[in-house]
Length: 196
Image (cartoon, rainbow, N blue to C red; front, side):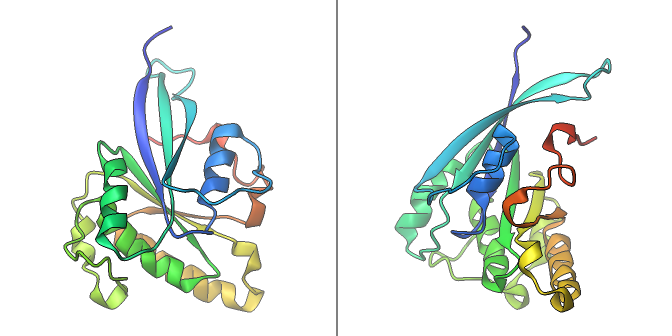
């Protein structure tokens, strides 16, 4: 068997947004019934064939690092998390579409992980205080995932989708919105995911 290329992907976001459930679905291809809170970091692995069946086929060993979502502002919490942020190949930013604060906190999460957070207090950064130019030349790919889409009332969905479109534009990231429980695998099949 040929050696596998290792890919490290951070999964970041506030507590309770669905990071552990998402990682479990990606790696185990099954819904996580009753996840517990992640303390520190949990790492799960997926072996993924890229461009399967072509001459460019390559197999990757993808490590998904589910970082605990404590939103403490103490520098000790941030410095503890900083050990997980080395040698990163990608970042998945996860937020709860029913919780606007979890979306706003993605700015802080991203700046912290990319060592662009100059503020030692970890203050929540909102759209008005955020410079989107920080991510224009970012070499680390970002994916923005909104969870619990089905819990948004029908008459509010358009407004929420507009807000998340601005988020993905700010981060220069791709965007995916998921239903609670991620049970419809026909709609979101991780087995067939591939990027060119």
